[in-house]
Image (tube, rainbow, N blue to C red; front, side, top):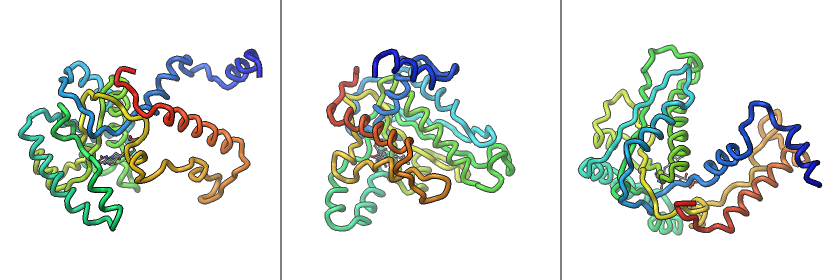
Length: 262
Ligand SMILES: Cc1cc2c(cc1C)N(C[C@H](O)[C@H](O)[C@H](O)COP(=O)(O)O)c1[nH]c(=O)[nH]c(=O)c1N2
């Protein structure tokens, strides 16, 4: 295919509202290079200017009925971090017992938090009664408020990656123990405890993938058409998805480590 043909296909599929190629590349780069960071945190402080940008990005997440059920609890105190870490250790010990045999041995070798090493912790919560009992879009599916707070987590995670900050989500807690460590009242649900900080490097692949815990699933197994379970392996979309996943995987395979400054 010559350059002219490529460009005309590009022009034909590009909406007038689409961002310029460079801006689109930056978005996809942020998505593909985001990682869950546990062990590479540096003590370098995170400025209020940067923290403010990523928390503002989180606050601009979508939410059911525009409920904005979140709060952002910023943790910098070593003492509070120690309390959160103790809650993690208790749950982590219990969790190890839930896996069998080889999985249990592997689980014990995994680093699954950076609570003490990361300079900042941010707990994103959900106030389930923030705008009263009846919320547009949540009248029948009550968990939509929780999902809204998760959208805020993802916004923060992506914005942080663009800022060069690593983020690690820790959920290995008894919920009540985490609430107690952070003074979160009963009516508020902790959604994510996030370890945030600059890092020595970002891995190219999920650590659980590199550790052989689980592989990334083939995207073609996950896409159905019209009815649950109906695959169409001949569909153009499926063929394109396979190519796009292969390209994403190839990029990850050739770059086992990526410098934090890249
Ligand atoms: C709801 C939820 C909860 C957790 C996580 C994620 C999410 C979405 N993840 C991170 C998870 O292991 C990671 O996202 C996957 O392994 C994929 O890796 P990347 O995020 O692509 O690097 C996570 N990681 C960890 O080390 N300890 C944890 O307790 C959790 N908990």
